[in-house]
Length: 82
Image 1 (cartoon, rainbow, N blue to C red):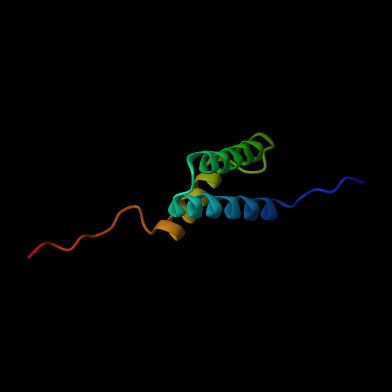
Image 2: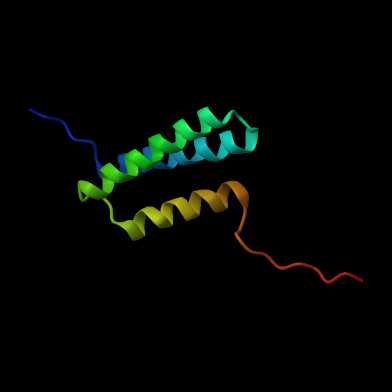
């Protein structure tokens, strides 16, 4: 009897992989190591799309959420110079 991984668990795996990529980028690791981590995330997201587990909008929302959690908002309000 084959076992399947629930969608929620697969999306949690994706979140963990994204957090790792953002952490590696912040740490300034070598390009090869960062590129490999990006490749894993890209491949995982492709599988989720092609298997019909998640759609593009859902994946983009997850990436945006994890990026905001790690790096803060994409835009912000700047204080005027006095």
